Amino acid sequence: MLVTRPLAEAWLEPLHAAGLTVDVASRHEAGDPAALRARAAGAAGLLVVLGDHVDAALLDAAGPGLRVVATISVGVDHIDLEACRARGVRVANTPDVLTDATADLAMTLLLALTRRVREGEALVRGGEWQGWEPGQLLGRDIRGARVLVVGAGRIGGTFARRVHAFGARVSYHGRSPRPALDDALDARFEPDLDPALGRADVVSLHAPLTRETRHLLDARRLALLPPRAIVINTGRGPLIDEDALVAALRDGHLWGAGLDVFEHEPRVHPGLAALPNVVLLPHLGSATEGTRAAMARLATDAVVEALRGERAGEFG
Ligand code: DGY
Image (cartoon, rainbow, N blue to C red):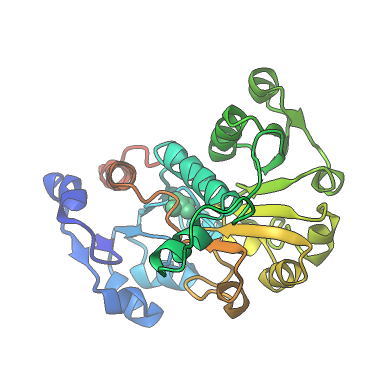
């Protein structure tokens, strides 16, 4: 089987323990689709990550012996699920284990942005701080803020609980109501996104990336947000039209944005890096030691099960 890039040896241990022959592509090959295709030839399993594009060409390069693609991510937008299905290849992802870490990171972005942590730290580190000032770097309160969670699945629902504990008023948009959130958080289900945006001081994106959700927040929808609204995205970059986001941040319609994901990763829109009212992180949602180890364990277990002919995950 092929692992598409070097990973911690401990993470690969379950594959070795199962007696699988494990081929690990180099960092260079990982970034080169043609090289990866060549390396995949004859593989029965692929252990992949977000940056890999698992398309029909890669599946065909692996050949008819390919039985499983396991990704160390909950998101599967980098995998052509139809092409896998058509070839009888099971797809396994890593839900649940990253829920808390990713919800925590959404809170981190919200707190860092609303309390102007980046600017404050720069002031202190730059040696320019002159002492306490009543009007210095005033931020925004989370208590009482109207927070709209878009995509109230596992991660969105957990973020909703966190932000509710900070005193926010929570609403959520998704395919269907979540009575557990309604009851526990006094949350409001918003079936229609457009009017919901008009009532949100903060919108936090947790929806999966699909054809339908690409550019979910475009220029028109960003304009529906009240002036000085805040956008948080720990889901997928292409959920937002980044050109439109930069324009809305530049012209002051938005107060700020906290982004862990970008439309064209790892490229970041040059307009974003130039703005003071953004917090930008390199897709760290699930990046804790325990979470990443648990994700690797789920993915490698799925490979082992599939190659033993057992169940291999939920998309198979
Ligand atoms: C995922 O697993 O899809 C996350 O984006 C990784 O942090």
